[in-house]
Image (cartoon, rainbow, N blue to C red; front, side):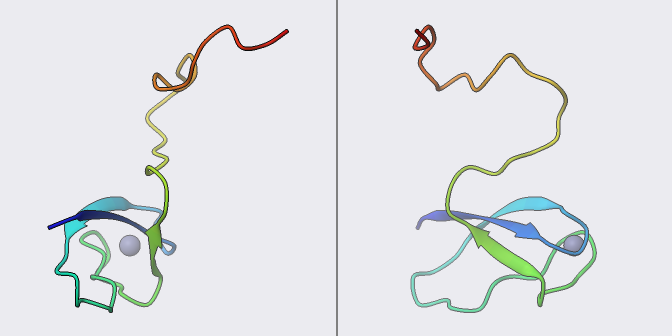
Length: 64
Ligand SMILES: [Zn+2]
């Protein structure tokens, strides 16, 4: 089953959930318990873990 990434708009908490394909409703936020403000993320979750020297997956040296 695919792993979906969600972010709670209430507390900005990012989390992953493995959901069955027929699951339509977003899960509850494991931090604050709110389900109304949880949105599914299309791309990777942007976490504020501190400054980093750019995404590790991006090609380097592409600027001219
Ligand atoms: Zn939350």
